Amino acid sequence: MSKVHLAKWCAGALLVSFITTSQAATISLNPLSQDVALGNQVSLQLNMDFTDDPTLGGGLDIFFDNGLLSFVSFTFDPGLGDDPCLQRQPDVLTPDVYTGQLSGLAFGNFDGLSGPSPVGTLTFQTLDAGTAYFGMADNVAPVGPFYSAQTFDQQTVVYDASAVVNITAVPLPATLWFMLSGVGWMGLIFKKSRAARDC
Image (cartoon, rainbow, N blue to C red; front, side, top):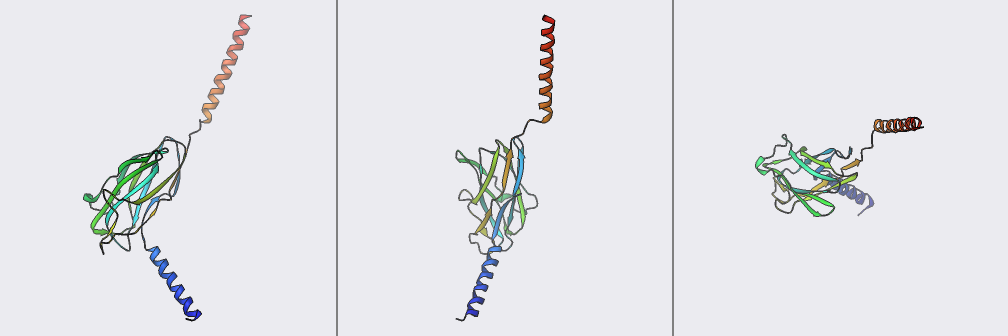
């Protein structure tokens, strides 16, 4: 095989690989980064894209740091187009002391869902200062993974859980420090005037 043919073959293989990768089914969390003050709630949007291979549906698990976040709710997006009978709220599990797990969050439609489309909104309560990371994976049970509406085969889903939530402790406002110093000065003046009267 000549170098020219080898180069063309490699370029073609690279192009096919790129096209295949870019057409993979994806589920992601957005926004990628957000800052929130300790004590507040934070929301993440769960998105899906099965454009090239519509899905019958399936389930996924979402992992989070339960030392920093507490799960509040998941609300399905009304524009998703899924069958309400196939919707499933996740079970909240704690596999270990550092990990919270939302298990078996599911959606689907027997006619197939393609996307891209928002699936819904996850809401968490912040518990402590720090950086919260997330993970996602196919659900094993009770729902199982996603299946193709065209071939009925199990789909390979690329999960993008690179969203990060930076939780910051709320500093005392400057006005509070100003007020406390004023009270301190008033106490000092009162103490001096009382000492002068006692003499």
